[in-house]
Image (cartoon, rainbow, N blue to C red; front, side):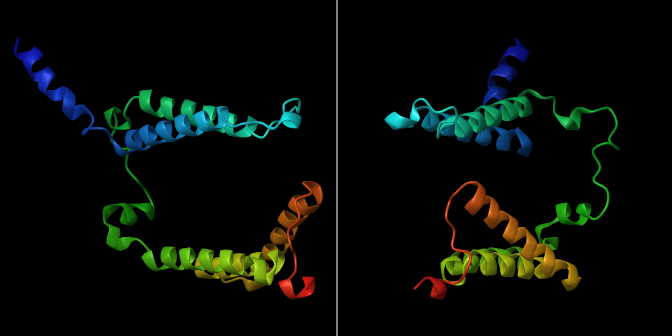
Length: 183
């Protein structure tokens, strides 16, 4: 009798007692379900009906993969119930970040967000190649990379490869150079 009464009062608290991983998995399951519903109800144009790869094929696959991953996270046993507590310990430099939010590098994070906004606003004016190369280079410098002789060629090569794949292979036009060259 006592177990029945106590379990009846504890059921509402089960949702409060979920670990952060399960809350994230629950949110991911809801997001993936909504995303999958929107992808399934997407209206396909008449000429797209007979294509091998329809515009909603990849979103449906992503939604199914998201639902499977979140369901696996929800039904997996909790990692805190393992027999040895040494497996759950965080080693290395991550421990100081997990102890308190004061240890986070907020300046770098906010700086990267501001840099991303500036990148998005300057993309049309500066062109894809220049804006992306500068974004990658400045972002790398902000994160602590000091080998500029490696950072600059890698960021230029990466931005060129992305532009080439999108523009030439996928045939989606992106302005590689600043807007003054197109007037």
